[in-house]
Amino acid sequence: MLDPNLMGAALLGRMAFRLPSPPTEAPLPPGRHALQFSEGREAVLVVPEGLAPDRPVALLVMFHGAGGEANKVLPHLVRWARARRFLLLAPQSMFPTWDIVIGGHGPDLERLDAALLQVASHFHLDPGHLAFAGFSDGGSYALSVGLSNGDVVSHVIALSAGFMNTFTRHGSPRVFIAHGRSDRQLPFETSTRPHALRLLEEGVDLTLLPFEGGHVIVPEVVERAVGFFMGAEDVGVRG
Image (cartoon, rainbow, N blue to C red):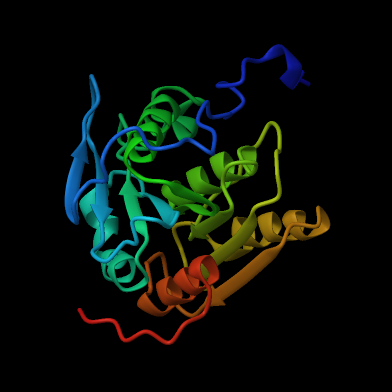
């Protein structure tokens, strides 16, 4: 068995980013912003209106599925970011899916670090409300990186995730897992069920939400996930 102590922090899925990281630049205005890197696709940051300048702001990072892009997952969450006033960051993988799925942590983790540093340079982030979320392969990535960095990430949201790969654990983030009982691409019984049992045995604060449906993002599930992250609140959300 490979000794994790012989591996570098990045290979273990450990981010360099840490909180608190005081802002060094002015806040970005409301709207959609592109965070650029030296190579690969940009990350997309959505800034809602009405952020209080003197208060820490919540941040939800949403990872797309295999073959996806930011524009495929953002529509499910933008309305909630505006209603509940949290920052929404959507990184995009260097390759058709996330590096950990292909062969291990690498450029996507580096770019995630860089994106978080860019966001933190403009906003005072709330350490109690920093979520990693994702769908399908993105859900697997959120689980893996979120649990490996639970001393930074407060909440992990996995929608129809396939696997969980953690060499080392830090902190104790709360975890929300939702999965369709009729999912044929990543069956509930062979993916989410064993992961949920393992997390429960380890004493993780877990919310498990099986639903009737396939390999899809369901609006009602997203609403429950946002409530898990930001706290239950009766908010009328417009399309």
